Image 1 (spheres, rainbow, N blue to C red):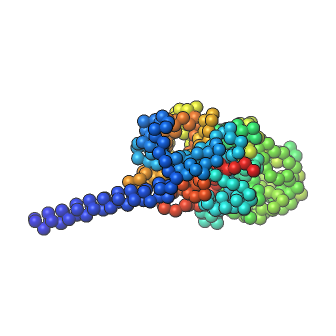
Image 2 (image 1 turned 60 degrees about the vertical axis):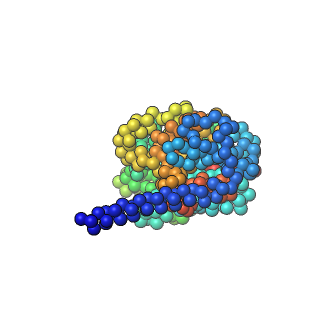
Length: 434
């Protein structure tokens, strides 16, 4: 009996020591992070904060350009929230987006993306990881986003509304996109493609641009922005040339079919596009679309204002609407994920990324998590509630977890969950105007 008690006592002692070790390592990790030591100043006494803010630190404030701030909030629930702010009236900075590797296929760290931009004489100030996607699959897609992406007016990617992979529930709550018009208006909507291929008296609806072609998304247009090949399986594919590029939110162009491929995985020409049709749908079109067939491709994004958007990208769930937590998110939080079971992971605390704005400012946000003693992350409901308390009027959720990264003023500002910067699909960015 005494030996059993000794063994039990030893087990309790070892467990206690392990717990203490984890807490000490977490605390040391937090203290050793560069932004905990460099350029951080406490501003708790200078402004009025919600009761849920323990402290707010200004990070590298000596390097802030006019209209820009980099802040860290300590949330009372046990999370560090990093926010890069942009004054919407600032004449020297603007919002921008950047596609990883300059194409849909593949991923890239924000640090590497900023290096590419610097070579193009573009000066990034801050960036947060944006859209959702797959990191790889058995077709050679070493990373591919699922969401909308508009860059410099070019419609690079848009998906069909699907509750696939748990990312895009077909409701006003899900698949929200953020966009900026040429006159600086900020938009936050669910965006629809409304694409049509017209041949003689027939019209073929287009479901998506630069997405996976399958039974759930049977007609897809692939542009040179996708990559070298379509990477489809058994799709009927038609190469369209003599067509205007790039695609835009309001688009009409004539085309001529120059090649027909019944096996899929076509080469995408630099001066044309490929129309891929899933086999069950294609059988109704193989006699109507042949080599030398001419027609018209039309696109008209809705809501109509999105036809003018210059920079835009998609997330998945809307967090804040008109200064209040999204009603569906409230139900989701109260049911602990039961109201949208495919998103139940969002009812647990994890690292998060988001974008928000109000009438005065734009906010790029990263919430650190999965780091005991430093920051455990947030649920989506906690995040939406905290944002509304900070005065953010509208907000959407971006890809989170180990991808959550806020790069700012030349380095990674937050502490990613895996201890290193993960490659991502695209970047929501604040940059200096040329």
